[in-house]
Image 1: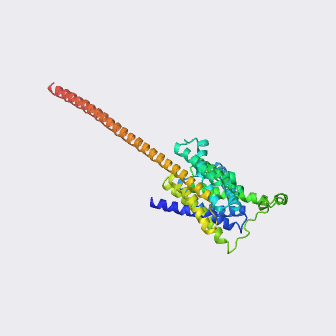
Image 2: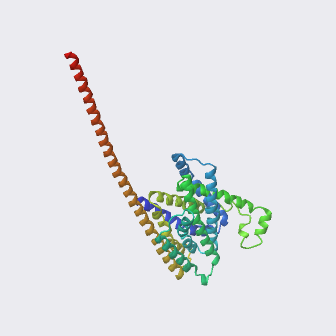
Image 3: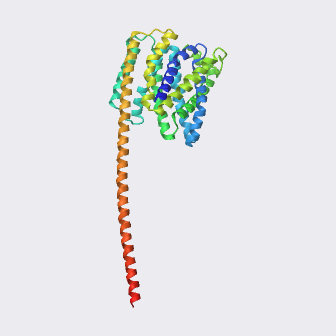
Length: 367
């Protein structure tokens, strides 16, 4: 358990520093380009672990699996993480971090709608509390930067959707979390590469350059800006945050359970704004602090509820195993008794046959 919590702490730190590093790197790289680079590096970094898992489980990457990875790559990398990168670029890193950390709430809703999983009372309460916290942070009646918040919220919703789709892929294709993540990142990066190639078409670039909001999507570079001053930042984002961060998160989940691993997104809303305050000097308003507190409460309710459900399922499973064991012992005793009866009957018949044979032999001698 101690190693599991160390993995969770490492993952939490790496995830909490993500928005800050993206904000710092945003001054040297195009937002889409940065997404492409970090997920390509992260996917390649996780690839050896994925290949090891595939060989160990004797799985195959067939046409259906490729289609699944293309879908998860589209949702996670191309849509969700691009929206997140833009949220960090157009808004505050601290706000983006807090809003994005609400993605487990949306995952709960999608699990109910798509996987038809039961939405327990604690989870339902958590959803209501977390939405209230988001509204307090966003302060819809006094919005100062609606674009950044809306992008962050859309990113959280789509990432929650990705979480459920990847879980369904795991159930149907039997790949573990690290394998799905690695190929999701690689396929998503390739899809981003195609989008970046389209931005170099003269007609497309001309249309995009006509609007200041879309100008950043014209002529997106692939590797421009990588030099001795920025390579460490790119490697930290790709290997550290994206590769090791996700790997430790999924390993912690496999060592424990989803509820325990989700502590990452419960601690991040508190840690990320503090790191943004210290490093980026981003002021944290009172309503943001209140909203963070409300979201943390909602997360705790969800965590406690999930732990209770896990404990209940474990008890039911143990009771089931005990019942099976008792029934097995009774069945063994019944079979042993039946075998003993059959053996006794055979011995009796064998003795009767011997006695009959002996009597016949004596009669023959007398004659």
